[in-house]
Image (cartoon, rainbow, N blue to C red; front, top):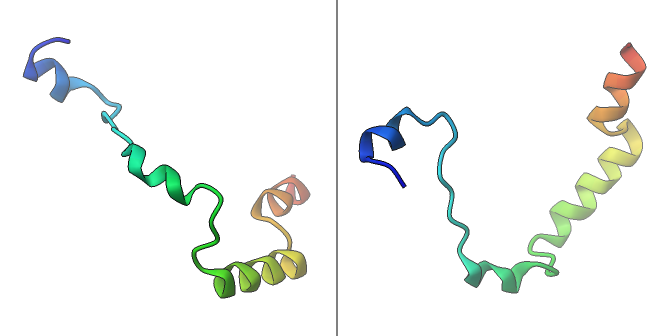
Length: 55
């Protein structure tokens, strides 16, 4: 690692991920919102699909 000045010049931030959050990997935290979002994506399509269709 360099000095503090080198850290401030860096364009990419340093991110540390807390390992205690791994317990939420396969848990649906908001099932109602997930259902609503899936219905919306099924009806409208994903943003990636709409970008491909405009080109």
